[in-house]
Image (cartoon, rainbow, N blue to C red):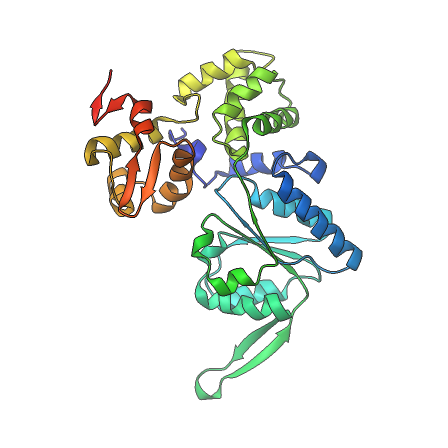
Length: 337
C-alpha cells in the first residue's frame, strides 16, 4: 500500500519508473512547456549537427520531477547518439568514473543526475575530461606512482541538480549551457495529462484534465502519477471516461485539496504553528520533529509551499506566513474554526 506522501517524493518505484518512461515525449514536437529552454536547446543541437561536433556540456537545475532526465534522453535522440545515465551518489570511486568515461563513444552523452552529490575527488577527474577530453590515470603507489594522461572520446556531459548552490564554482564554470527548468502552468499540465492519457489508452475530458493539473504542484511527474490513480478509480467504477466529478472523488479519497496540498504538507505546517508558534524554526529541528529527510523538506516541501506563499525562509529559520495561518484556519496559533 502506498504511503500518503508517495506522490510527491523524488524516489520512484520500478512501476513508476516504467510509467515515466512510457509517457516521455519522443521528440520536441511532443514536448510541452519550457518554451524558452527548448528554443535554446534546438539552436545548440542544430548548430552542433551542422558543425558535426558534440554539444556543449549542459547543466539543468530545478525541483525534482520537472523532466531533467526526460529532456536529456530527448536530446540524445535528437542528436542521434547514445546516452549513459548515472547519478552522483552511484559513483564513489575514481576507477568507476574513469571506466564510464573511457567506455563512451564519440559524441555520446553522459547524464549525471544529482551531480552536486559527486565527491570532490571525482570532480577533479571531470575537469580535464570536460575541457580537454583527457583523463589522468595514476599507476602504482607511493614514490613510484606515475600519472598517465589518456585521450577519451569527445562527449557531452549533461548534469542535473535540484541544488545548484551546492555545485562547486569550478565544475559549474565548465558547463557551456546552464538552464533552469521552471514549474509548469495548470494549462501546460492539462495538455501533458491529455497527452499521457492517450498513451495510456484512457479517455479524459478537458475539465477532468484541468482538475488533475490543479493538484499537480506544477510538476509533470506528479501529474502523471495522479492521472494513473484517477484512471484506477475509473476502471474500478467501470467509467469509460475521466471527468471532473471522477477526479474530485479520487482526490477526496487521497485527501489532496485543490492546490495539491495533502495531509503530509498540512501536518508539516501545523507542526511549525503548534510546536514553534509559527517559527522561525531551523531545518535540523524540522527534520528531527517530522522524521522527514533534509532533501525532502528542501527540495519537495519548501519550493511548493513558498510558491503558494504559505511559508518563508529567513536567516533564523522557516516561518509560516499570515496566509499560511489563514489557509489552515489558524490565527496567532489558535484555531479560527
